[in-house]
Image (cartoon, rainbow, N blue to C red; front, side):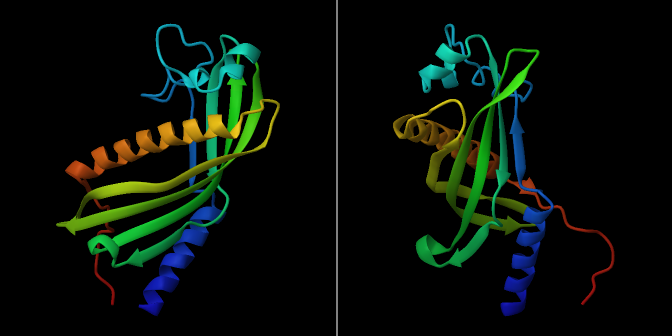
Length: 184
């Protein structure tokens, strides 16, 4: 067990150092384009939660860039019949763009805890995820976002991410395993 934990810890640290835990959402990202706008005519967008976006940057688009700030912590527990808890800290940089220029508007710190119940059967992973913590705090930027607004955004985003993950896990997906000879 100790040896397995060391391998997992080394893999997490390597992923963080090589910046493998990154996500970039832009208007060209499928499924979020209408959400990443500062003017919301007839539909829902981020400016509905942060009105100063529309006031300060009308008719702009948004980009969100997320990067891990520490290696994720993974805890295996017996609660609820066996759960894998993952704690991830990160930073989200919010950019606004008018189509010509892109400007950094805010930098947010993120702290997430997800509890997952996973099943592995015939090299296929299925299960469910519950985000038990999804906190956002403002670090810096020209756009001042209140903690109430950040809490509303965190609630919405956590529900979206949890639903997306659970939809993906409900049908399962193949676990890529290396082919070739087994080495002991």
